[in-house]
Amino acid sequence: MAGEKVLVIIDDKEDAVQLMTESVLRPHGYSYIVANNGEEGFRLALEKEPDLIITDLRTPKMSGLEILETLQAEGRDIPVILMTLHGSEETAVQAFRLGAKDYVIKPFKVEEMLEAIDRVLAEKRRMSKGMRDVDQQLARRVKELNILYGVGKSVTSLLDLEKVLNRIVEAAVFVTGAEEGSLLLVDKDTRELYLRAARNLGEKFARGFRLKVEHSIAGQVVKTGQPILQSTQDEETLKVKTGYLVKSLVNVPLKAKDEVIGVLAVNNKISSMPFTDNDVHLLSALADYATIAIVNAQLYEETKRWSEELEHKVEERTRELRATQEQLLQSEKLASIGQLAAGVAHEINNPMGVILGFAQGILKTLPEDNPLRKPLTTMEKESLRCKRIVQNLLDFARHSEPTPHLININELIDTSCELVEHQISLQNVKLVKAYDPALPSIMADPSQLQQVFINIMLNAYQAMPDGGTLHITTRTVGSELQVIFTDTGPGIPPENVQNIFDPFFTTKEVGEGTGLGLSVSYGIVKAHGGDIEVESQVGKGTTFAIKLPLDKSEGDEGKID
Ligand SMILES: Nc1ncnc2c1ncn2[C@@H]1O[C@H](COP(=O)(O)OP(=O)(O)OP(=O)(O)O)[C@@H](O)[C@H]1O
Ligand SMILES: [Mg+2]
Image (cartoon, rainbow, N blue to C red; front, side, top):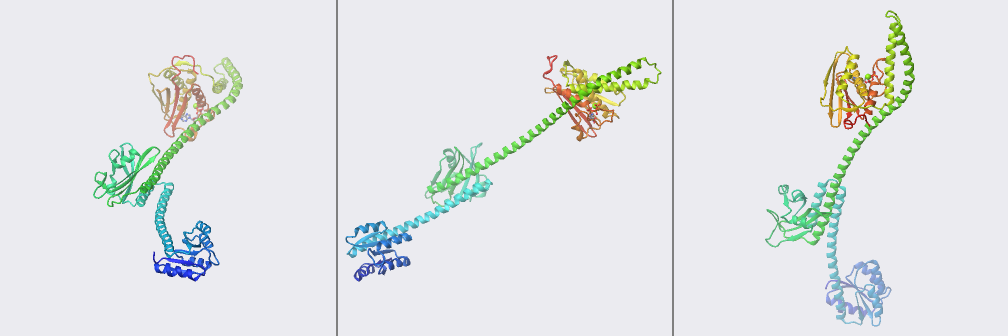
């Protein structure tokens, strides 16, 4: 084509230069530069960037082959035509390997050379247009990839699902050049698709957007799991939804495992430009990102719920453990003190019996008016008190196995009351009984349980020196028989509550309490497979609840295990 620049490098033969310039290049409109040796030619090639180089194979200073080689090494893509003398075809083959585009054998006809020039330049033009197109396409691909990369990054870095999905729809509209885009999710309960994110969809329209899976293009994508690419011509339209028509669309599925959880869609409402397969590819990649984001968000929620549940369970277990530990501690305390007490009690019991025996013996012989009677009576009383304490200690220490009988608890409480009232008759305490008349009999050791009732009632009376009320309730709850004592005394301060079942814990004056009543009672109730619970409010009163198992009782006389 005229105007293209040709560099001619020929040996120093004038006539050859003339033939090229005057007969071939100038008459056919090519502009040209001439170099007289290879070195100069190569320099000009770099400097002027000609469209074509025509060089002799044998040029002074730098041969045609060397020029080719060096151009290639420099990465210069200038086509070269070689001129060779007849007989040097072998070298010509080598030249082709080095990238020469053609060769002409000297001497040549003008037409021959023109033809070669035309062919090489035409090929160059074709190539460079192709390159431009490829360049453009590449640039577009790079942009698309950059967008996908950006979206991919936001999927992994943004925890806010809302933001991620909006960004995905935005990217979908951008990479496909669509007018609008939307991301619909499947509502499993109603079999409807609802709008989760949108771009350029009128806000009013978007708000109530719902599609039946059964009767829509998007629904078809959900059912088949396949993308849909559709476009129309002229005045035709596609119905996305009643009252919502478009000219072209792409819908791709959001697939999580084998299930379609939604659809990513782009539409053109005004432009009739159709979408392409490449758009389907791009949208599919974006849809995958959306799926990952959604599944991630679900997993995150689930993990959070699990860890909360776990935390709750751990707390619960810790509480249970603590309670068990406290109980263990209690029984350990009882056991170790019990052993000690048993030894001491045993040692004291006999001498005490002797003292009591002598005191009583002497009392019998003394006349009524003898002044020694008073101290001896005190001796007798105090020895009896000692014996009682020792007996308590022994009961407590021995863990004496209960000797069970089938007993009626209501009756046993009544007898215990009588015994207590006998001891503390002067107090202004009102006794209110609320017995369950249908209370089943249970297997238990009556004397041991009586001891428990007496201990608790005595404590209540002692707590109400100025009077009050003691409620005694019996009832069955589930598989338990419960005896509940509630007094209107001063209550137990919270810091004491955890100690009251400890042996020797007492708040009473020296000589008034040994602190054994409740620990003995605790041991007895536990040996019966039951439990004692206390609830107290300072200033209001205290409730002791004794819980005994019902199950093993009926018809199993003589045995508790
Ligand atoms: N109903 C109650 N109201 C207020 N405090 C009570 C009540 N029952 C028990 N307590 C407290 O619990 C402590 C321990 O009671 P526990 O029966 O074991 O021993 P005690 O009554 O002091 O002596 P003991 O019963 O051996 O004569 C009491 O000293 C008292 O402080
Ligand atoms: Mg007591």
